[in-house]
Length: 251
Length: 187
Image 1 (cartoon, rainbow over the protein chains, first blue to last red):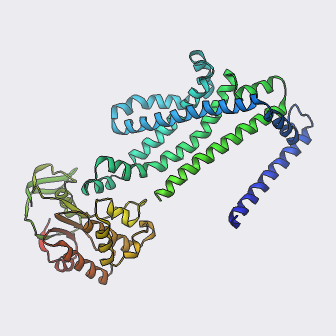
Image 2: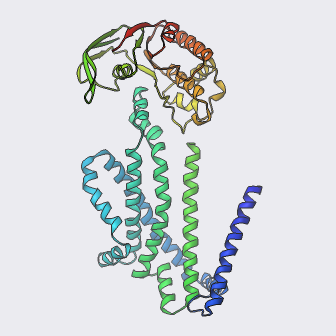
Image 3: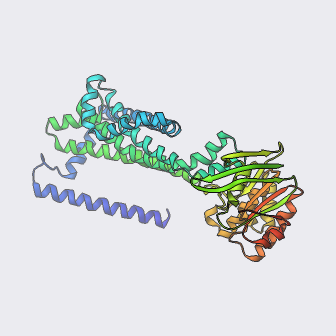
């Protein structure tokens, strides 16, 4: 292991230990497990859950729903951005809708959509709804702010439209696209789990969270929350690595 | 090769060309000379087909195929120098030969951000020379180069032309002389 990597891990461990100590102190100060459980209690609850098949099913299905919503949101947002940048009418038609989606609280959408959509599909739809405008707006601005002089250079040297798109336009647009794709993942995850908490689909982390709250199992609430946070970090790291690999390929 | 007939061109209220005509034959070497803002770069853009006059016609021969050293280099920052050159369809061997002749053969695998301003300028010249062309357009091609590099780059450009057309935009008459250009005063 390189010295820099070791230092990074050491720093991360020290920061984690600090916040665990804060948690431990807060739990000791409050003195009621119902309000703030000790880290040890949350860990035991997590170990207990991890021994059941239902927990892993919940993890798998929650991930599946949210990733499906995220991926379709990214695809729709990117397509919308391209069409908006290309056709003024399309932009004029859809920009109020994007403003509306951004302005309305996610809880309102969850309650509204719950009337129309079956609970297993609702988290995916909500994740889609959160991701799509983020990707759309930033990718569209990336396209619109593209330096036209490079396009003129491509035209002068006789590059085909396809080559111009892949070799010139795309690498310029990618930074704004990947930045929004990374931050949208966090939003997808949070809104998706929030939707699961409200609509309680079978096998979901949201349902586990809600059940733990209903039965006043606060250590379990903390344990499920920790799982949600860890999964979010893992997915975000994966997307960042993929984006980083692309950026390195293209310098 | 190019016939510009009675063109008018303006940027908003500012008139750049009024009833301007110019005829450029195949193999000509001309220098568009004039003060800043007189429309030299605009004329080069019109010749290249990147700008269209408000009125008048620009006729280009079927064989017309431009290559250009842009005023701002316009090297793609996410591609190496060699990738920037071969993107135009140029052969790798031609690209390397031009880079070597311009004294920057060691820069082929470097990114533009890793090069000095003068090296980037020579890379842009190498790209223009490596591309397939019948008419070479140079917009202030030696900006940022020292006297020795200007002289060797001009010599290499002159050799590489091989009878093809050259249109140069510059403030410096000595550059036109080095490239053997006929002066056309603009403005």
